[in-house]
Image (cartoon, rainbow, N blue to C red; front, side, top):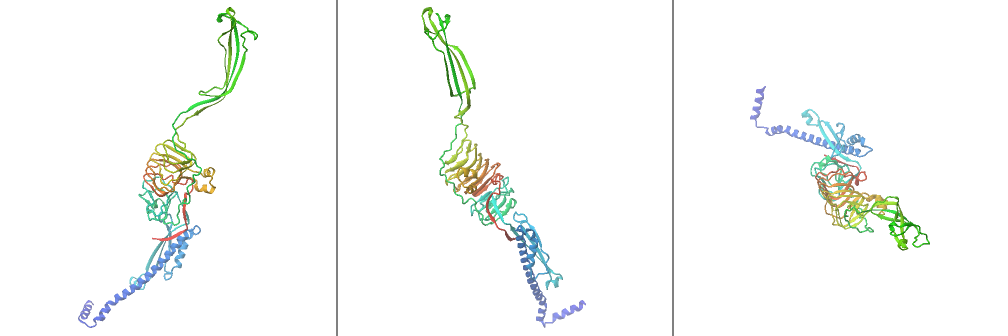
Length: 536
């Protein structure tokens, strides 16, 4: 058999006629194969495109179903329905699509994945392989439900890159939310990989991916706004001008007051003889020389101030005999007279002790208009609004307190300093004080309540440094300043919200106190309708 084949090949080799036909015959399988492959590839591509479009629509349909509270449980059937209506040439050849939920960008179960495949014989490849071809596709869509966005930290600069920056050593955590109005791709940025809780992380621009460990990321959200931008500074009209100063510590003067009544009873005794010491007692009548009538005189009551504590009650002194003096006669007939007095004192209505001129060395400023406030002693701010045209410096190593207060910075170049050793406890102004003392309407008072610092125009940095002990409860509104919280700022027991141009928090600062002073969800910075989009 093999020898016959070799002879045939040798004969063909020696025959040079029909070369063209031979070449065509040799090339025909390749030509037919490439043509068949081209047909198969075109058909495969058409199936692939159709299936991909179908799973894309299925993922979008399932995501839309999940974005609504009324249809969220029917997302699987909705996805499969969308898949089926978008099939044409692959109808009847596909598997039932797999529809599952997954996580995306820090969210939980906020993405729908659809997987499907179609199996069908291709004209050429099935002849070669003896089996059908399977085309597999998948698609994923993320969704967000209609939501209201709230935050306790808001950076309002519209374009700044890294407008809100968080360091990697911060501690505590707050679920109140962080917002940025910047459209930059890195509007909210992290310098490390801290995993403290932040809640919703909301930005008009982008958010660094590492924040998925800190909360739920909402990027490129439209319609975000500063909720306090429409407020204008309160008027200082009618407020008195004042100056901050520290009193000198003094114990003062302590006194008591009492009603004092004095009754004096006076009688007289007489003697005759010489010398008076051996003279004989006698009786002298009103008709005789030297006679003096008895008296009974009451003085008071008079209110008197004394330096020692008086005892209420009645006391008597006497009778007390005074000195004798000659009132008549001569020689051995000299007549002598002496007064005998009994004094009765009554003390009543004792009041005291009362100390005047004392000072504990604590400054107690009153609301009004100030040029500057520079804390130099323990200070207790009284309830009300403080208008400051210059700077406020909370000093070092002095305790500063104030309840129901608001500081309005009226100038454009003043500083607010909380230093490394400041010890500050302040609570923002209440709606009742705004209405009762300053005549605000109920609706306006509600807009301003809890405002602690209102500083709309100053552009210098506001720094909280080092080991400052802060117990603040209220809103720090500083939309033109960069707020920097550095070092070991400790946490108090109350809540602050910050609105600033940009915001930096570094070191081991504690985030626990970034929360709503009212105990609610923080300031509303925007909302969104339900959204759905395809993702990789």
